[in-house]
Amino acid sequence: MGLSIRAVKAADLPAVESLWEEAGMTSYASSDDIAGEITSKLERDPELFLVGDLDGTVVATVMGTWDGHRGRIKRLAVTAAHRRGGLGAEMIDELEKRFVETGITKLRLEVWADNVGGLTFWAERGYELQPDIRYFVRNLDDSSDPC
Image 1 (cartoon, one colour):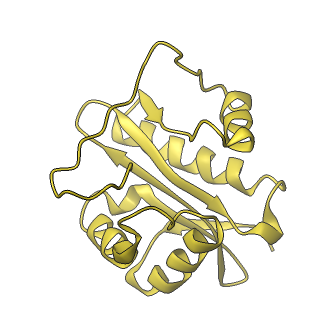
Image 2: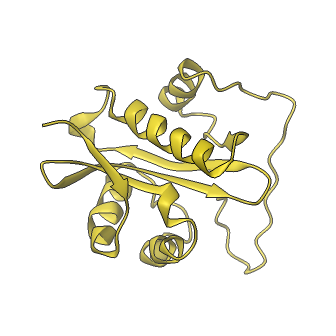
């Protein structure tokens, strides 16, 4: 059976959190509230927060957000056992389709500079690296979380 892609549900929280942990997406400072991040996203643009499952098991996630001006893609993750098989591309295809259906046609995303696989993936999908843009962060809660 193929990948089934759908909006995330509250019942998916443990599977999503586990997948993010496996993918190394919980290692930053505020990772103690991953469940809170997932739950709050369920309240805003939930149709843009997707999971992909194979035979009832969540094997991929991607989070789309919208600030009223541009869409953002965050937290694309595929379980290690299913990487390099096209599931990430399927997830992005579906998210891009949903963005367009919502009227969102300009997208941005961030990739860590040392994530060679991620940089390659996005370039192969037609995303352009913007070498003249620098990304600034400021945390108003005194945390050191760079995200």
